[in-house]
Amino acid sequence: MRTGATFRLAGDHGGSAATVTRLLDLQPSQTFEAGERVARRSSAIRRGSLWLLSSELPPNGEVADHLHWLLDRLEPKADALWRLTDQGYVADWFCLAASQATEHAIELDRLLLRRLLALPGDLLLDVMGDD
Image 1 (cartoon, rainbow, N blue to C red):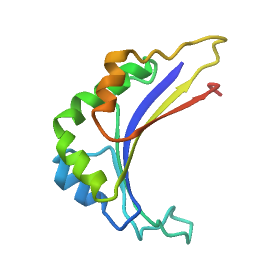
Image 2 (cartoon, helix red, strand yellow):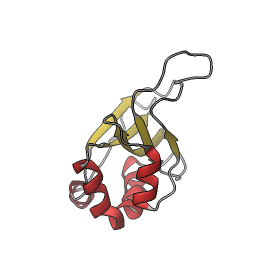
Image 3 (spheres, rainbow, N blue to C red):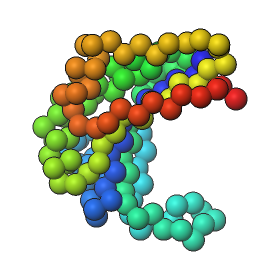
């Protein structure tokens, strides 16, 4: 089983990832700025910014553990996160669950869901085989 979770803030309205870092006073896992090339060998230019905070837990745990890790860091920043979404940033919680097992449940209990609902962002679950 391979798992992970990332909180993402996209600034398609002209907002920058640097602004998010400054307002949250939190070091992101990765950032992308509008106007940058999408890839080294591509002429495509990124239209919006993207700020990512990914769980640093091992990739063989439970999705819920990754979300708790993110929430522990982001809950103290709740007011700033809501201000950013009020300014036009789009938030989401992107979760990965990849497994070859014939059955593996992703458990998100009510406490975890309550914590997620207190912060902006839709919950996205990417469930796939492990290959």
